[in-house]
Image (cartoon, rainbow, N blue to C red):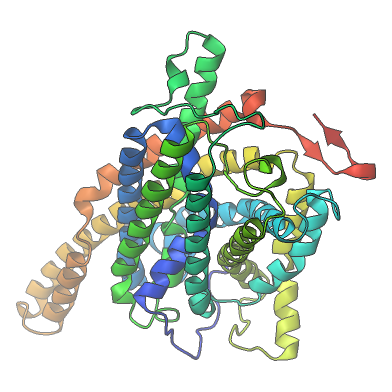
Length: 484
């Protein structure tokens, strides 16, 4: 069986440092996370939320460390190929589903975020185009253009731009929360104090409110998982084609983890303390619905949406580039990704065109993108971030131990460990020392299954409860097919 997992090796080495790699991993989900952390803290509690964030982040860090160790040994440049190397076709199929499947299902949501941000910059009140779908058609052009960057090594500079934009969004959000009270149009306070553990409605006497509150609690916890997903890009980044020194990649993982925790605590806690626990998901300031809090046509509102727009476009690029490469490997495995001649660019656009076609189609025709994303999160994030890396690492460690025993016996038979056989044995022992995280496999695997249960509970609860599901809409205006 032939599986297209490789392209010809690049003629140039990578020049990305560990700081840039860390910012790329942080920027992958940060634009969405920064507008969702307050919802997460409010729905899970001022104490329990941060604890859940730290534990989930720790498990994600260790999962990425697992993948990094195996990538250094096997020199693969994508998760499905690494799975194929260690566990054969089963590893390939699982890696393809949990990584590339997530990339594909996130594309329409990324398009919608970019479209909403662009509308907030240009037409916040909807006087020009009053339908999200039209804005999706507009942004699809330049979003697809970012896919043509082809390689994560080419987004090094953009990672710093993304960080700057995320910081700008954070400061804008904190400024409006500090200066504007959370009141309705009549001046009545809307603040409901948060709990230390969970949310207040979880102890409600009303069974329906309690059921909804538990689902909200699970959705808040699931945000801790999808807001930080280093394993999605670890194998792609931690190789010589992208990084100048792949051995430094653990520093990048720790940097991205620290940024994630800082954003979660600083933004989430402050917004909830100031505005109460009933914060929308996502919380966006300056949109038309919140115009009584901060006018949507205010210059500050448009600037905030501009920064969010840039960060979301870069996030789309980080999602679509690996997915586009996967399509290219399938259609044309011998294509030279370093060839930017006009003909090569046209070919690459053709190879990667399914990304934008499928993204736009799903964005327009799926009735509720965020319900779809909740289900996709449950089926992919805990597996790609924790369960799959732990599974591979367990078998890799077992294979290394068996190889070490075999090499040891061979060395004794051949030359008492002093000649060529002894050198093979020493290399086996050296590699085993590069797998220092065996102790963490049970913790990461257990956290992965726990996160799966939490995400699944939240996802199917969101589908079942109409208040959380929201409207189901397909099309708009004269070509509206569904509106419930």
